[in-house]
Image 1 (cartoon, rainbow, N blue to C red):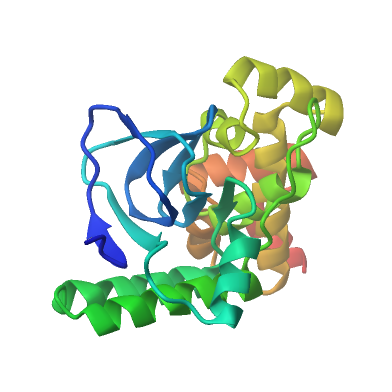
Image 2 (image 1 turned 30 degrees about the vertical axis):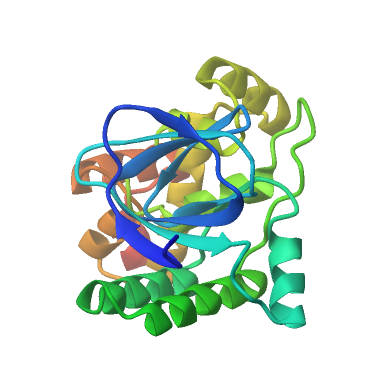
Length: 250
């Protein structure tokens, strides 16, 4: 009997399979690699994917990874409203990022499930809660147009992870492209490299935080700079003034 919802860690060795039921995967901790029907992407904490039934997929996890998996077995009875929601969500394979509110919800439900792992009623209720929340909180991206990067998806990811280190590989994974293909197309589309674009996003956020009066050390951490000196150097190079002097003059 397939469990409605599971909290698990994936092994480091890659595995490939398919199954006769839909599956929702949410990243809770660490990194996992998911390749769905040839579309490879990393599902890290705060991200997820929708795997339609009978769709081949490969997966592997890094150290200390943890995911939440919601299974929707065909033999389970669903109301007409539930079935309509499932059909719309699993119309095709999709990757997505969770907004902050959905991440908080997923974290709270995962802790509850780990405390009560054998409560089948709780498992189904949690799975239904997550599915309902998806339609309200997630903007599932449309099918990717060849040769075009979805900049809204890139911006959302950067906004949610600005306090962390973000690699070009992670952004390329969102676009389902190789690093070199993504770098070339991104520069053509945005007029700057991914590194330059990401730095600009960090600096614009830092500029906004300075205007709002946040402490300098807090801004450096919130905007993902490796150190206070790195923040000061980048800010002065971009705006021609140090953050401290900008604060004093404001």
